[in-house]
Amino acid sequence: MAQPLHHYVLPLLLLALSFKATSTSTHNSHGLKSLHFTLYQQEAINKTVYLIVKGVTGPDVSPSASPFGSLFVNQDLLTISPNSSSKVVGVAEGVAITSSLDGLTNIVMEKITLELKHYKGSVSVLGTAHNIEVFDLPVVGGTGDFMFVQGYIKPSLVTFENPNIVYKIEFHLYWPSYVANHFSHSDRSSTLNGV
Image (cartoon, rainbow, N blue to C red; front, side, top):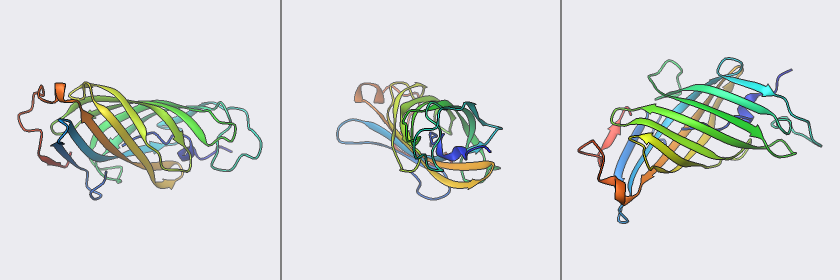
């Protein structure tokens, strides 16, 4: 019987002011431009996320654990609300490898491609995820309007109704001052509704 994958592929990704996706963009006193928003990752076991390699079960593995060395891949849609039929504004593609003998820790690599109202491009995420605890995944770079971006995402489970899983992904993105003034959009300090 397949293990529930919501414990394995927690990346994705994607600061909720409400269940409607919103974002804010500001400049702080340190010259950093920031952008904060929330999206919802729609995952379906054996449709958008797959177990490629089943690892070796370690001692005393809990039901929320995956065998050590398990490899998962995903290509999930990102929507503006938890409802899977809401507007799609991105795609999360990535890999998670169970990296602890207790089966609760994973190394996560993710490329998140976004087509928001005022921002287009991708962010790359690389870090360690825990199956049970809420965690931060560092953003290590980006393309397009997200070039030179830094920050983190904070994924959390919203629902798990086998085979469908929904994650809330909070984005916290920051641009250094030397690139903050080089954006193609004239007003980057407004609040964006509907992302």
